[in-house]
Amino acid sequence: MTVAAWLRAQSRHAGPWLGLAIAAAGVGGLLVIPQAWLLSGIADGAIFQGAGVAGLAGPLSLLLGVFAARALLTWLAERSAIRAAAGVRVAVRSRLFRHIQGLGPAWVAGERSGALVEGLTKGVEDLTAYYARFLPAQALAALIPLGVLLTVAALDWPSALVMLVTAPLIPGFMILIGQGAERLHRAQWRELARMGGHFLDSIQGLATLKLFNASRREAQAIGRVADDYRRSTMKVLRVAFLSSAVLELFSTLGIALVAVLIGFRLYSLDLPIPGWAALPEIGFREGFFILLLAPELYQPLRNLGTHYHGKLEAAAAAERLLAVLGTALPQPAATGLSLPERSPLHLRLEGVRLSYGPGRVALDGLDLELRPGERVALVGPSGSGKSTLVRLLLGFLRQDQGRVLVDGQELKDLDPADWRRHLAWVPQSPRLFQGTLLDNVRLGSPGAPLEAVREAAREAQALGFVEALPLGWETPIGERGAGLSGGQIQRIALARAFLRDARLVILDEPTASLDPEGEAAVQEAIDRLARSRNLLVVAHRLGTVERADRILVLDRGRVVESGRHRDLLAAGGPYSRLVAAYGGGA
Image (tube, rainbow, N blue to C red; front, side, top):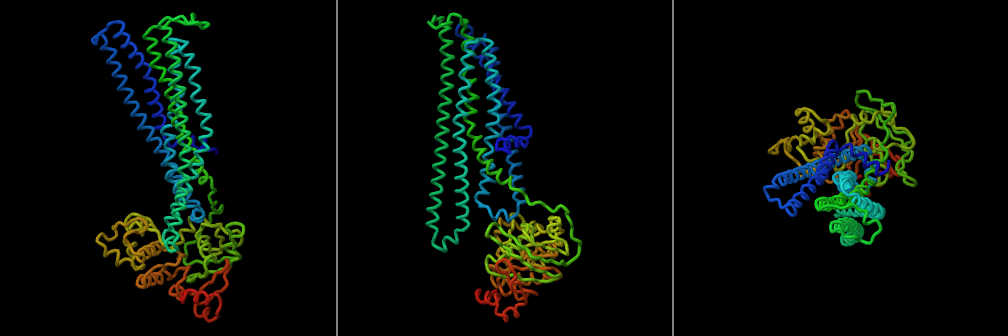
């Protein structure tokens, strides 16, 4: 689908508001015809007919009524246009969120977060001008000039002929200059996405930049990116100002030609122009009426030219949004099998190979077994494939070769929603959301009764600190768990896992960045969680590894060593070297 077709298709999300905005603006615009006729009649009566205020009371009252009606319709059109654009923004943003959610964390990790944020915020906001301004202006540019032209043609065909010849110059020039402007708008949007992505990445890595004394160099890089964006913005503004000036020039010339034509005929001047004598005579009221209407003929065309840049901004933003929406979603299994309700489960990987592209092999013929009720620790150097394995089991990635068997059924044949119902995942940095503590724990099982939530918190060693708070479970917390310590956040995340009562629990270094007291509390909660469940722990610390039934050592996407802690240390292989490298922690 082209960008223009996609933008038009989103008009359905505007509901009745877009049509109401166009209708109100169109009626208000056409009211300029009776307004001009009343004004010309009042002027003719006051100047040439000698009518006083009493004699003009009727036309003056009607004129005030027309003014009031136009003001009301203008207000209604503006409100409706804003509502229409808001409806489109909400629908597009919702669709983008759902699509990105469907693509999964693996896809998001490969994108620049700043560019995604720009698309979801400014990219969607840039659609406003297209639906609230450009589309109504486009409809009015066809409706109002036609009404004015037909009215003028009924009174004075020479003036209508001048208007008919000069009016198309405005949209014609707009199309010519728009071709270059569209290219500049797209370049500007790319620069903005680059600047936003670079700036957000720099902010997120500020601690690392400070650590390596690279913050000043990065600030200079951001300055260069910002200067590139400034230059592209100025190019767009130059084109916008130039086009506005030329549109004003053409409309002024058209109005001037109509005024000269009427003025000479009012004075009954005989000009040495072929066919001049054949032109019909014209009276003051008709001439003044046409002069009042002439600017109204060109005004919608000028407005269209002004709002055409809003269309170009929307097209540039839509190009990026379409790139996201055009990314194919992972296809669910055609069979859609479900797992039987029994605990625990048996997981086996056979010859699993997965790569992120040429030369980027993450899992290379991986063989792995997780027996019912077993607690397995996964260790290995960075880049060994631990995170990829976790993403594969969570259903965010699919292997290129090999099989992943769950209770004898292939994972790719299982219904993703049903499979995730049997899973609980506690990442290294759990994400808490703005809301109450109760809302955050219930994320693992929406609608769970309070008693079940309290029991899960008790198992996770979180009940004590939660109920010690003044508001208890109704305590509000900020985004990312603002207001809680690292250990408290980790225990809330474990409470989610307890409440979910999943058959397979995946923990990604659950005790990282915790003080000894917090680590002890979390470790005790993990021991409780491991009862009668399969537990897969991605670990670096000895405390987590020593308690495992089995330790698997990964290197370059393969299991290179397997066994218990003491046996692997005694073997003097890769595991013992990892322990030594981490200074006593695996």
